[in-house]
Image (cartoon, rainbow, N blue to C red):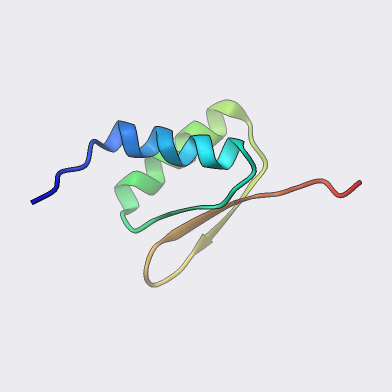
Length: 63
């Protein structure tokens, strides 16, 4: 059985989001942690909730 460290997974997903890439999690618990981090950093991110999980998609400003 593979046990994931929630904080480590959250940080990896936040690194992706801050780099401009989408991040996906299946767990509502992880999604809540990511939402808190997004709010703290005041990032512009679209959250897409599906039956299978949560997508966090950074909003990009078109130039």
